[in-house]
Amino acid sequence: MKAIFQLLRPLNCVMVAAAVAIGALVASGLEGVDDNYRAVGLACIVAFLFTGAGNSLNDYYDRETDRINHPKRPIPSGKIKSNSALFLAIILFIVSLFMALFINIIAFIIVIANLAVMLSYEIFSKAKGAQGNITISWLTATTFLFGGAAVWAVERTFILAVLAFLATLGREIAKDIEDIKGDKDRYTLPMKMGIKNAGIAASSSIALGVLISPMPLLTGVFSSEGSRYYIPAIVVADAIFIYCIFLLLRGNTSASTPIKGAMLIALLAFLAGGILPV
Figure (cartoon, rainbow, N blue to C red):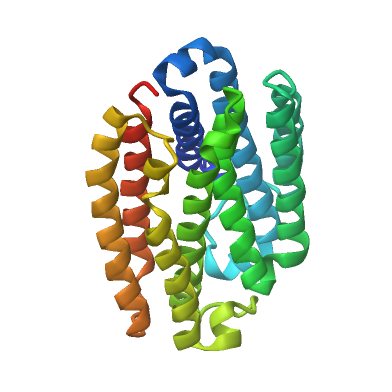
């Protein structure tokens, strides 16, 4: 059982489910979530299971490189057979799809699309650097769309999805800069462009996110009360993002950790802005 938990990485699953709940809160406020609590709860469960399936599938496809890079993971350590991990992933994906049918058609389409994207990533684009970065960023961004879909207000989460996409893309490139010496089985963006140009690409993505971070206020996504909480939190997040931009432009190879911290604060900003009535 412990090995299965290690394979699924439940903490990661919980974080994704929380992002879905925040997307629902931003889209409709507490009242809207209360009115659609079954759909929101189901969406969080689907996100949890889908993420666990993705983690299991990822370990299945990485089983050979993990024997060298992460020998203590369940498959290379022999705690779980590779075919068992693949079977678990398939079962969880099927359950996720089935449960999504009981949310609504928009949520089901998002799950179908994400499954196609994830399979394409694992089979074709993981080793291709930029394509993999974009895939991870897409999957992160759609957690907010999924939460909005659960309350029939997906359009109110578009800007949050864009912000999440840009921040995640910047961090994924920054991670590749950090890992450039150890990435023997991937042809990443820093390998193609060099560390300096990859840093510029990561900085550009993050900078664009900072520039459009006021958009939830300008487009009326948050209520006036929610905006009072969003503003100070997003200012702090943007300040850290700007610091990370300077790190990347100076060729620093340890920017991904502060970027992750800024993303967490931005997530709290979304929560603070969305928790009050629209």
